[in-house]
Length: 479
Image 1 (tube, rainbow, N blue to C red):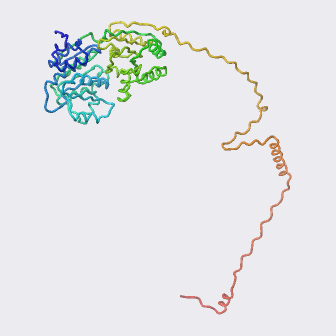
Image 2: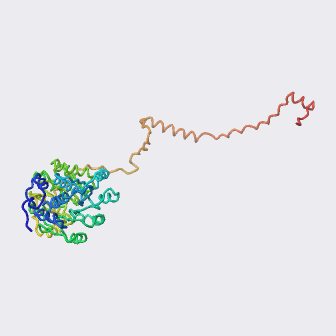
């Protein structure tokens, strides 16, 4: 294959060459030089290249040219680009709009974490290209707000990451909604054998483009490992940022909780830091990423979910605070620096427990990573702790026997007034109580008085009227 040294020689249209030139690019990268002619020819493609070498433009430019060659009367989704993360979806959508600014093609981006109604409205207005994550695209398919029966080109970007994240069932369900006759493109930074087996299930005689040896980082990235105890990683990171005056650092941790905790600790150390991971809303992630790109944040702490899709121009430093369990993720992490021909530095903080992980990474890359110990942070050297202060203790007097201890007063109840009566008054009270008890003992016993006699019943009163009635014999009322 003859590799062209210019975009015009690849067969791109004048509108696309003009858009590329407006971005300052004059020569295609190796992956672009080999992939673009294959895609323009209409063949299926398996492409592997180092991260940051222009894979996105490798499928965006020929896809735009093929879609622009025909303009159907009714606007429908003719190209589908599946990506694993929201950040990567936003990045690919921006690339499509940038390179296709001189073409009448509409692009929509679909991902979770944001409202679905604005996406539905955009789809109803009609789009030609959809950039989506698998989960949210399935939501639209279930609600029948998008139709994929006219898709001509399917692109799986960062396919290995989609497989690692468990998107295989979702991808297969989406593939079942696509027409049989279509062009399939699979782009990825790493290219394990499992990807080839999956691609064989739905691709037809694909061409293979592998610019560099698989699973290798960019040559412009300087790699170094600093041995350090696990408990002192945060202190070493703060030391490196401050002593070297790093102004823009991307730090990777293994967990979301660890990312939040590290960002808070660095902020307390006087270093502007924030975290980005899957638990944060899309709006919060977008705001944080924008602050980092605008140099308002000195340190951005991220998890592996953000390793794919963070496109930061001329990022100088990437730090592996925790080494990844999957060696391929190391390649993707450090691929955030050393992009587009610029140099970068990848620093790994390696504890004793992570030595096997570093060995697996070196075996995957077939090269060793330079180990450099920072003075004052040597492994096994515990941080000097201040000596405890020995203050003189006061000698306690020996306690008296219980019968010689003063009598404790009854605890005061809630709301009870505390009245200081004085010792003399207390003595008078005790004397009065004793005198009352003595008088009670000496008083003679008196018989209780007898109960009062019962009164005779009251005789009825006979009036003169009653006497006269008895004498005269007043008859009874028989009525």
